[in-house]
Image (tube, rainbow, N blue to C red; front, side, top):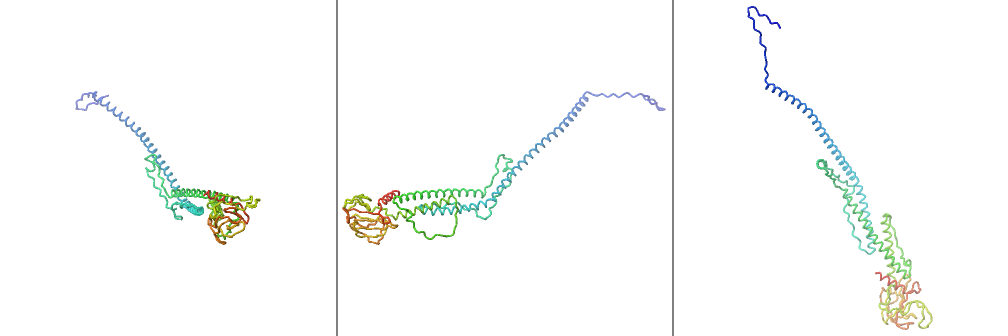
Length: 401
């Protein structure tokens, strides 16, 4: 490169020496270390930026997933709570109807209990104590709604897994308990009715057999019916009412047979008799030695032994009557008559009312008699019948007691 010419009057400068820079090894090492550090920092910064974004994305996704799960759990439990609340409201709406039904059932059971009390009294049993069901909720009064608690995290099981949702108790449970109690009472009433019906049927059957032994038709003793009537108030036609009707008929038949048998001459005419000396029917007459009809039975007894009425009735004859000797005749009603013959003494008068077992005379041997004994005779509608019918029926009747 050409050098500039010196100015006039000046001496020329010598040429400048070249500048030489000396770099030490320490400086080079420091610069390299700084560069390496800068490179590492840049790499670390770049990696941190990339990793942070990925970590934040993962954390965000996890939090979003937990949030969605929490919301779904809350929604499910709220739906469940809504269903419970809706069910409670529906049950509450039906409580009034169920109370009305229970009230009707209770009235029906009270009517049944009254029927059973009447049947038990007629059957001679001690009526069962009236059942106690407790007071029903007032009809027509709206029931208080069942409060539904607001959800909380612990109750909803958000923090405590498996925790049940509490279901509040209300009048529904009480109504259900009353329904169970009424069902138990109805079952007990049915058992009581069955017992009364069976016992009445058994006794009525036994009394019919006694009447058959006597040989009398119960229809001839049917009393005249009095005036009956009144407004019709039906009580139903279910199994219970049908059984009540059967029980009433059976008890009515039993009572009628009892009255009939009570009026029949079923007691023995001698308190201490020595047995039969002659039966009813055809026999060889002790006087004529020919075949003759013996219209009664002869009972062995000592002279003077008391002869007693076999049943309640009215004395229609008390006098000496031919072959009967001293005789007492008693009318027991319904065409049934008894005679007590060969008496040594008469203790009653015509028209006198006598009770069963009352002494009407003394055993003797008056009239056509060969020795002291009691001739006992039973007549139905004026015709003699075997007195053994009544004595056998009496033995069957009193043996059953």
